[in-house]
Amino acid sequence: MTVFVSVASYRDSELVSTVLDCLAKAERPDKVHIVVCWQHLGDEDVSAIADNPRVELLDFDARDSRGACWARAQVMRHYADQDWFLQVDSHTRFVDNWDTRLIATADATGAAKPVVTCYPPTYDPATEFTGEGVPSQTVVAEWTHDGLPVYAQRTIEDRSGRPVPAHFVAGGFLFAPGTFVREVPYDPNIYFHGEEISVALRAYTWGYDLFHPTEVLGWHYYIREEHPRHWTDHVGTNGGKSWTALDRASRRRVNNLLRNPSVGRYGIGPVRSLADYEAYSGCDFRRRTWTNPV
Image (cartoon, rainbow, N blue to C red; front, side):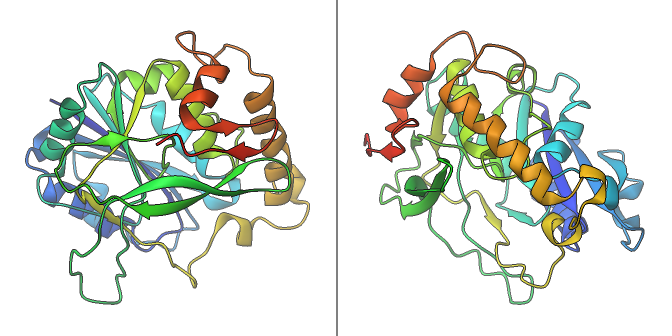
């Protein structure tokens, strides 16, 4: 079983460590192909992974970047019909045998088209890695002023190892059959807020069933206070590439999808409807309410 690994990296000092850990912890690294959207300013040393035949670096000047979804879309264009698709951020650590364990988790769902996704527990590269953490489920905590859900996490008490239904997806840890790339390609015009709810809606309406793992399969570096971000670099007018301009247009696009969707490449799928997803997830996008459907 081959695995295509998508990594979006924006001026990230953790990139090399993430890629090396991904390969070192895979049970079958020979079946893994990692594609990185490497957005940088020429000041990063990636020599440790640059010549690895299992790693493909897509070289972009960070000043030309248009955000995380744009980066993920660049990576998806290099998908070559691998059996499975894993999307992570460039500041991730992996459990031993993550590849076979994720495949086993997906198989355990019993779904024809499973998506295994979560916000992994945290790690900090400045401290000793302990492998601590607990699995969590995603819930809606509140809504933004323009009607996009804001998520929070709740601990999953079930430690049986069997995945549990999820209502939302996490862009930084998403595992699915390779068909996901063809059927739910990332919309490069979405900036940041709205990424995950739009992907969840589109995946569900394409017939994918969403699940959280009940065991820890990876870790994510969340804090990153001193690290550069797209929105700290792309300020001012910048020819329409400023983060505020991108974010404004993106939010309008996401809100239109959530309230007046159409079927298409970046629209909803043909298998289920918006109403089906609202009923499943507990979200009412027009009223900006959420009822936990547990």
